Structure formats: C-alpha cells, structure tokens
Image (cartoon, rainbow, N blue to C red; front, side, top):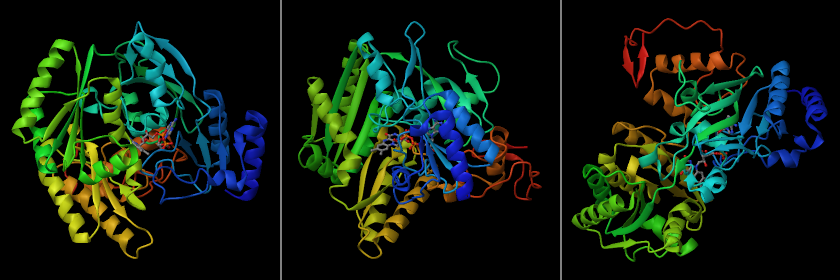
Length: 489
Ligand SMILES: Cc1cc2nc3c(=O)[nH]c(=O)nc-3n(C[C@H](O)[C@H](O)[C@H](O)COP(=O)(O)OP(=O)(O)OC[C@H]3O[C@@H](n4cnc5c(N)ncnc54)[C@H](O)[C@@H]3O)c2cc1C
C-alpha cells in the first residue's frame, strides 16, 4: 500500500470509527509485528481496533474498495504466524470486541464476540454449574475468535473434542464486507453444507468472525486429578496406550518429560514426583461412582506400567498446583533456554513410545535439547526444541530437528499440526501431506469465500492462486482416488 493510500484509508476509518480505533504511529504498530511465533515479524501498514461487527464490516469494506489486504488478530498468542501482519495491509484487532452477548442455559448456548477470552466464557457460567470445554493452555489470554480460526484444542480434547465440536454457529464478515450467519444458533443441526465446520480452522482466510455461538456443558459431578511419575517416557507412553486399550476416556491425559518437569519446578514449584523421568496428569470426570471405578483402573494400569508414584489431588488447591506445572511449562522452558521452537505434530497414540525415542535420538545427534510437554491422550506432540540464537549454528540445528520431527509424525501416519495451525510456519510442509490437486481444491473453496484474495493472504498454502484462474488440467499422476481425505474427481 502506498503511503498516500495508507493516509487516506486511515483518514476515512478515523471518520467512521473514531480516532482511537486507528493506529498509525510506527512504534505502536510495531507492537503488533508478530504473534507467539516471534521469529516471523512484519509491521502492518495500519492497525484498526473495531468495537462491533458493524465496525468490522466498515473496515473490511474500505479495504475491499482500496484493494488492500487485511489480517485478523485476536490476542496474538498463535504459534504458527497466522496473525503475522501484511506489510501493505491492515491488521484488524478484535481486543475491543469482548462482550458476551447472551447466555441461554436452557439451550446450553452462549453468543459471544470474537475478542472474548476463552476462560471468560467458563467464568461467566461457573456459578450456574456450566462450562465451555475447549481449554488451550493459553486459555487465560487467547480469544475465542483465534480459537475458531485455529480449531484450537487443549488438555480436555481427548474426551470433549476440539473447538469445532463446541461451536454451533458463526457470524462472519466476508472479504467483500457482507455479514453472513452460518450454522445453527439454537437448533441441534442445520441443513445443507457444514459451513461452520469449514470456517473453523480456516485461519482467518475465509473472512473475519464477528460472533460465535458456543455450546455450554454442565460441570461434571466429580473431577479427579491424578499425577503419576514414571522412570522414563517409554513407561509413560506405554501407560497412555494401555489406558486407551482399557477402554477409558479420561478428560485429560497430559505428559511431560524430565527437562519440562525441571523447567516447571524452577518456575512454579509444582512438586512433581522426585526423580521422575516423565509424569502423566490424568483427569477423570463424570458421575462420582463411575469416576471412582475408573480411578482404580487407572491405578492398576499405572502400576503395571511401572509408575514410581501416583498421587491424587486431595482438594482444589492441589489440583490447581498440578495443573499449574503443566500449563506454565511452555513459558517455564524460557528459564532453561534462551530460545526455543514450539513444534506441534500428531501421531497415533500407539506410536508414542517409538516416536519419543526417535525424537530423543534426533536431538542427541544434533547436539541440542528437546523438552516434551504435550497432550498424550490424543497423540498431539509439542516438542520444544531448545537453542541459543547467539551460538553460531544452533538455530539451524534446531530448525532441522524441528522439521525432522514433523517428518517423523508423517512417517507414522500423523499430521504436521494438531492444533496450532499452518500459518506461515508450515506452508512449505503442506505438499508433504497433500497432493497438488488436494491443495488446488482447497484454494477453490478459499476463492468462493474470498474472491479478491484479501483475507489473510500468504497463509496456509505454499503457492498463491489467483481466483478466476481456470483449474489447470489434472496431472497424469493425479488419478481419481482419495488423497488424505479429499476426493479427486
Ligand atoms: C503458552 C501458550 C500455550 C498454548 N497452548 C495451546 C493449546 O493448548 N492448544 C491450542 O490449540 N493452542 C495453544 N496455543 C496457541 C494459541 O493460543 C491458539 O492458537 C489460540 O487459539 C490463538 O488465539 P489468539 O486470540 O491469540 O489468536 P491470534 O494469534 O491473534 O490469531 C490466530 C489466528 O486466528 C486468526 N483470527 C483471529 N481472530 C479472528 C477472527 N475474529 N476471525 C477470523 N480469524 C481470526 C488470525 O488471523 C490467525 O490466523 C498456545 C499458545 C501459547 C502462547
């Protein structure tokens, strides 16, 4: 965007939204230059903070008219560079859109604005005995709009599912500035294509979400939290597989290795079992009788798998202490390493033990450290690859180990991302999972929502495709069949 266009756009938006909603000052814009993946940085040409869906529409329409790209941003905690600004574009920040618009407990629904913080929803209904299930570890700061865009997960996903299972309807501002409502706002289902399912996880490339209808759940009668120490990751991995094989569906199964434990202890003194090479946190919830029975099964499985200590949280304070260690682990690793890459990949749970061993080998061979802290229950790994940017060669070694970990996930039939999204970080890996025809089919969908290509361009896909460009002839190797779930006709 030329300086003249930026000045004129800022003037028009100030006139419509008020002066404080438009940020032009260079230093202030710089504070938005990255999300949680700080090694990608771009200062946006303009930052706009709308207060309502109507104001979002105004901004998007002005961008459309001027042919200016835009990027939505919630709290900026994303870990794949999804909210990385466009140098010639507008960053639309939803932090002023934090109203819970309605709570309807009789129907188990709430309608919220996109900037509402994840945890604020559960807090708003806690006194009535309800909660919102998806619980990313960043839940005290991340926005529901960001959760929708990334299809965020969390510790409870193993039992309750991801964001997509808890969002029943959306209001979306398309890149042409139309506000559309999709999905079901009160009824159990809506006929036609599942557009809500399509928009959830689309990383801000199909439009900007302006309202979210979330499903609320009754709090379970009993919640039991168990902390178990194991000699090594091998036994903890085997115990996770054994829990699943025993037919249990705990609310959470989280694993941390010795390095992550040590970082968490230094940061928050969480009193995890001394000398443990790995810990598992297992949370059971449901009717009290059922949970008591499940606890015995878990204890048996842990004993069979060589647990060195199993502790049950006796009260809410102890439960909070156990979770504090896990939830602060990402930040805590900053105490033991100047820099680190948070990787996010998925593997079948049955491959846990062997993949963790291979990650260890990769790290040793490269001479760097990897801390593991992750959602073991659904095989969603988060290896934290440690490096020091001031040591020549360490960043390259970390990047190479980080990439090799994703290759490992794919080799085991897994995926390049479990919950953090593709963003800019994993675009180059998309062709490893999808054929050129798969990617082209996805681009066609994107073009249907965003013909001018202004919504978060340059994310998810390794190559841009102009809408209106005729689909290229199918290649000889793309015979009809199923490629990673997308049917090629
Ligand atoms: C310490 C830490 C722990 C984390 N733990 C987890 C975890 O357990 N599980 C998990 O899934 N993630 C986790 N994350 C990642 C991150 O918190 C999630 O991806 C979260 O959903 C991002 O929300 P946000 O509001 O910060 O979004 P942002 O980072 O601002 O944006 C993320 C993406 O959403 C898009 N977006 C934002 N708002 C909208 C909107 N209104 N409409 C359309 N698109 C929009 C952006 O364009 C971008 O593509 C963690 C991050 C940190 C830093």
